Image (cartoon, rainbow, N blue to C red):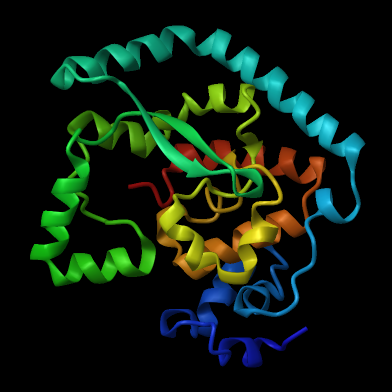
Amino acid sequence: MLTRAEALAHPGFSASQRRPEVTDRAEQAVGQVSGAAELVAGAVLPEAPFVARGLRLDWAAKRGLDVSVAVTALFLLLPLLLLIAAIVWAGDGKAPIFRHMRIGRDGRRFGCLKFRSMVTNGEAVLAAHLAASPQARAEWAETHKLSDDPRITAIGHVLRKTSLDELPQLWNVLRGEMSLVGPRPIVAAEIARYDHAFATCFAVPPGVTGLWQVSGRSDTTYAERVALDLDYATRWSLRRDFAIMLRTIPAVLAQRGSR
């Protein structure tokens, strides 16, 4: 395996990734993410547990947990889901649920569901904003997010701060397109940012929550996100899933890294 110094000097690492603090902060956030940056840089990747060890029993347990929690949560949260949908619809009379194509397990595309937190002409608004602001272009290029996103509606800010916009993803979990815990579901344009790490990160299903969500969310750089996703995919366990779910609750309440 490459040393970190060799990895950071590797041609496959962009200038924004050649910062030691990127890996250091990711390691501090999750504890023992050693080697993640080297893997992203292009070293030989270990296979994810589902691929390498064929943990059928563990996979069955993970899927069983997903289904049981998703069914229970959808039933208990139905009044809240209907209330949020009504509020979003009342804002502009447009559909409250947003279906966005994301990349799932083994590179399969699926429609990721969220409560709509943006204006319906978001792509045009984003293009105009990036064209007018060099600072916004630089931020978007580095993190694929904006600290002051003009597309987000008033109710959308509240939904995102509280992560309530992601509740419809419980339906994706029930359908088997997502898991409760896993890597971030990404759009096709982000695949190149994962480089050699993509196949390993997405040998497992994307999650409603994950290491990124409990380790700073939007406060992390893109290199850190990849390192966190890679760490999860290569060290997955049911016990760790439980730990991440427990950490999600205080992270959401504290609104760490939410935008």
